[in-house]
Image (cartoon, rainbow, N blue to C red; front, side, top):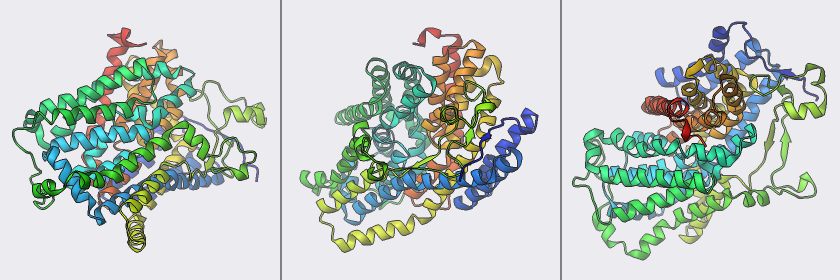
Length: 570
């Protein structure tokens, strides 16, 4: 069936305020039902999806068939790769718990430091940055939240701290994918964009570890561990700046995460906080007993940490471009032999055209049926069955290696797998609905209407350029997707206002990372990893103002670099 070409319109109600209000309706409804009415996440997502479909078809004029195909496309993407990651991350964690190995992991971490503040720095910030650099796509939130709750953190803080920590590293996540994508979209060299990001994010990297500690224990708690906070944030910020400015954007997080873990670990051999801090309402049995830590000899500790070593190696190898090329079957003679066949989405692929100023040139309606023209201007919609190269598959193989290494009986292995699948049904459905909503806003053009509202801010635009990136990530759940969505718009607006395009385009990515903690995908991942399904609204309220404050901070940094310190722009 040949799809009917449709050109997006960004002011369907002939009034910017009215059109912006219509575009915002599905997002406002989602946040209201989730955060205020406290609906279960899948009901809130379903309501938001229905509203998005109604706005796209009735207000924006999107063909009904294309809108329906978009929702199905988004739901499929929600399962693979996003849901596949979370499902296997929780499965791996459950394997370590059911075999008793996680008790030894808890004991070994407690021997390093039994202070919850230090554990948050090690796991949520440092290890999370390393995982973000290797894979992205919500993996660090899923893994770190599960680790923290296993260590004895309260579920709300395990989820919230993992979300807050997953900010500063995101722009360089998944082997630099967001920056590399932004370069491809805008034509600005990736090294230049990476260097610019490396002159913005280190300020946040210095702050986020302290932010985590204050969120947990207040300012008094920060005074007790400020040396460790300084080592943690300072090490990561220094590596982030140096590597991005002198080497490249691809390995910033991996090197930064590993360097921070090493620096903090070495520092803790000579320094410990005077008072050990614990949550006031913590379960006294949740903390690993010192006797267990002392009795677990070196071989047992190594054995207990092997599943996480398998995980780290797997996600790094799977994140390498060469690995993805091989696993996706690139270069094979025919598509049917490819390991990751791409399927054109019916009624949608190359049927939706973005219009100026979201793209650099206006659509030539006289040539819209020309295939060559369409390939250059129309939105692609191909679902890639990349089961082999998906990060979730790497995590599954790590779980399989764990089962073999720990000699888990076949019956117990499948019992744990079935239990995990049963518990993850609602989170998987929620993720699929949330992604369907995000895809409808993208292909329906409502996200562009919201983005264009930020471009009317004149000389304040450098501040709002960061907030536009924040909005893009909050809508799509991905810094990469936000860069695809708004990268060209940021460049065009910067040129129109006489601002440096490198600064403004990079702000889309560096500001966008602050929206990562409130996007629907991340919220659901956090709730699933910590066993809080049904409490998504509580977690959203916990992190929402943190997200706003950090996005405003990044906006202020961009403003200063635009008007006070322009020499900081490469």
